[in-house]
Length: 622
Image (cartoon, rainbow, N blue to C red; front, side):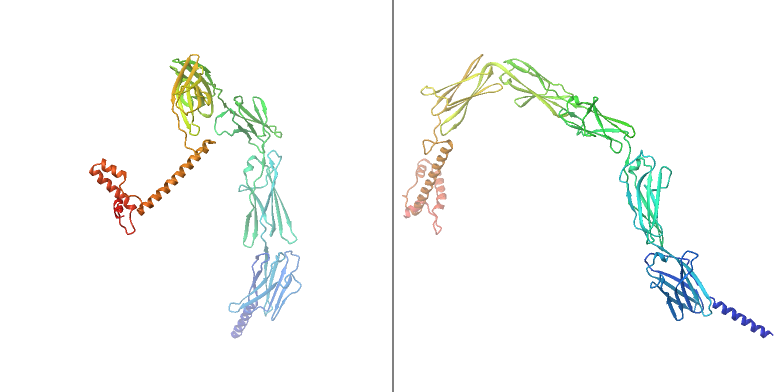
């Protein structure tokens, strides 16, 4: 009885073990994520003591009411890839089994994954005991969209618009699953807000199954939005998770009314003077700039809208310039103003304007001018500075006091603003002659210019007397020229100085007559080869030619004499210089003279053999 019970117990244990080993357990991932056009490998792991005898791969679309469809079948030793399915020619299966651990692996590979591959894949495994195990995996497909394209509204947007205005469009193409678009303003996300922000999204599913998403942004703009940056952000799914990309930032044009007006002038410095040109520009704080009107002393001025150009300024142009504008849409009016000062310097007034003084008298000159700024005064006489005050006093007047005086006034802070006035001062009295000056002589016709300068007022009348010193006869004057100066007169005559002359210069006015005389020497005629030289230039050329010919003749003669001297053809004897030296000089002087002669003549008498002889020794040998 006991043995039978033991036998039955072992038999039951054997059946239990066989049933346990006969069961097939299949493990698969719930989901697998792959990119479009890549390849997918779907693993199917089963637990079994024996290798799988049958393997079936089938697919099922997400719709529950649709039955699964087989795409692959394996039955030792047959392998079948079903024809006429979406996977014919695109799938392959490899399987292995490790008996030591009782585990097998089946890998389904899909090439060139399509969007239509997003479905459930079922793996069914059978063993020798006809037990079956089954596993399921959902395949998910992903495709990254294109970069976002943002298009801004080109026309300006007014803050006066009622309700939100369209700002821009943002668009992405060929994403899967559907991408999401988020709008940002200066890094802050925007969301729908009644009357302030409105976002409208549209989704299009293309024939390829990919999605195109477009989003429109509407906002109620305010003035500060002209400096804001808007952009869109796209979030999309990839097998690894979620990614994000941004569009380029954009700015929008905001229109708003002008509430303030400012004016500016292109002043190189703060000081304007009469004759200058100034540009006054008007600018409002609105956008776009409105139409401007310029006024001065209630008079409307012509301008280039925001620019007023004032040329050749006058002192009457000083004052306040007003710029104003009026907004037709908001009925708002804005004003602005700027003041300018045009500085001036009136013509100079010198009193007295002209004055005649007696010799020894005193005179006070006053120089003034009306000016908007302090001025600096300077007096000049004949171009030389004499004083730097408004009042110039002349004491003990003489003929040297007479002349042209100039008063120059300069605005200290605007040196370009400068004016001057001249005044003639005469000193009354008998003429005073400085003397007779003799000019250069014309060597061809021996003519010479004589100049006589006489001071006095009234301006003296000039006359000349010219006579020969030896005969007393009058000599004709070739030319007379008189020139008045600020204090007298200069008289110049031209005469022929062929003999010694006496020249008398006479100056006379209502106060008397003054005369001065001077002896003029005779000038010799220059050497020429012709008696009638056509001009001074031609006579000088002939003289130079004669001198050059004479010098050439002297050079030739010297050469001949030197040649004869070396050949001994000249008479021997001491020179006159040496004889004179012997008679007049002392012994010491004679020794010095001979040494000198030897030193100089030795060079000339050096022979081919190098011997040096004095002229006396040379003659003795001959």
